[in-house]
Length: 248
Image (cartoon, rainbow, N blue to C red; front, side):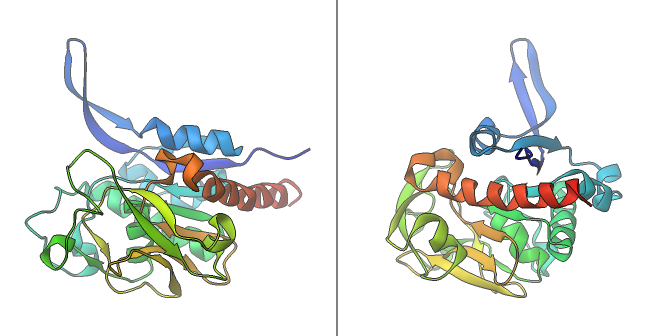
């Protein structure tokens, strides 16, 4: 019997208005991530961005079989020794710190990690890399993010022989995009496994790992366009972890 792997996602903190309740703080995540994990065969659980969770990173990793780093607001550039760009979002530092700590320890412990958009940037920074804070300073940003709050679309080219290519193939892939930042210097051990026509790195992975991969786009929003292949590959890796832990 195949075990259902437990997938942890760090929740964002959002001001939500429902009916008469105005701007109430919620620990939440877009349902598209939950649905994509569930469809691929995983069991998602949310991890609130709190100091007590930051103090218990290893215990959290003991409880999950894989870590998904979802999209969201820009990271605090202090984490990679830069000053903030005027176009940046205000950071939620507790979320940044928790996800960086979880990503770093997950990689060290061999727990599968899958980063989406901001999540790819978290993975890169956790491994010592840096970010380009605003693509619009040097190129046409329209393919990557045009109208804030609306996805754009462009192609990426997977690198043959990579984990990404094994999941989605080597043909150009049309993806769903919404970002204004990107990888600048790659983190330790990471390789670029896809790029956009303008040269922006669109996917990274850690060679030799069980599964450490990040994509700059939003596959959870387009499962029929290669997204399901990525989630399926991630969940397969976490199933193996769950099986190993069940006999340990």
